Length: 373
Image (cartoon, rainbow, N blue to C red; front, side, top):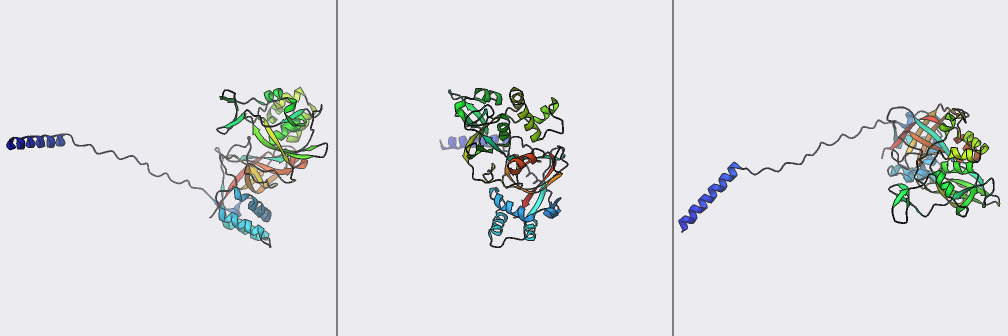
């Protein structure tokens, strides 16, 4: 019995060894680990080598930087130092302000895909007369955000009663459906159109009241400029499509004719009315925009709080200034601001700022000031 068991065990062992010899157990394949990608090389230059740096008002630049750098996610050491310098009993000298930037930053130029220049435009906080009730002249309602509007995956959409969503109406449909009781103020049609392009503005009423019309929402439609189609239709000369020229034409053709042109831009903005504190409006970064020291950028390529050097010249619109150059802070965005070398310079409040802003259309170069720490 024992011998049989031994023979059985021997046979079994022999079979097992044969199986192992003829069918080796496969070794698990090692997962493929790709080699690490090389880190992109960023070409930098000294801040002192930026075009126009010698002519900059370095102290004004430092003041604007200290106000806006809190929105940035990096360079905290430089930001804290700048704030301390501006809060000290003795303000820094222009030389000390210049040394601050040259010590704490290097500059990296942004590039377009084709290597060409980008584009600088400008915007402002308009101040317009308004009425609390409809009149034949002030016949366009300023509307509050509708209740059926929701932001879904970064875009405003209409929420239907059954819970489904759909793209919101365009400008023409919204204005056609608007009812008088929905108005929170009344404006001239061309003034409201331009305030919607700017994204906010200030309203003054006949009783002396003043409010800020702040951006509340948009209809999710793309922005479309009307300057080019107006030139193509022969309504304005090709080099005469400044903001003031467009506004003057709309005013002179107020009614269906101007309405048809404004409808070429399907984007519509709703507002809320806030108290006017006499200061500058907040940008998308939640910080008041310093006059001539803030830009709107494409958040797909820039971050709020970035410190930027701009250099732009050779504007082609009638009445344009020769050039714009200086240190600015990326504190805002806009629907028409797209691309890595695209900026909208904030010029301040009121009519004079608007007149200048309407003539800014300059080839642009941009550098990001990269903190050393």
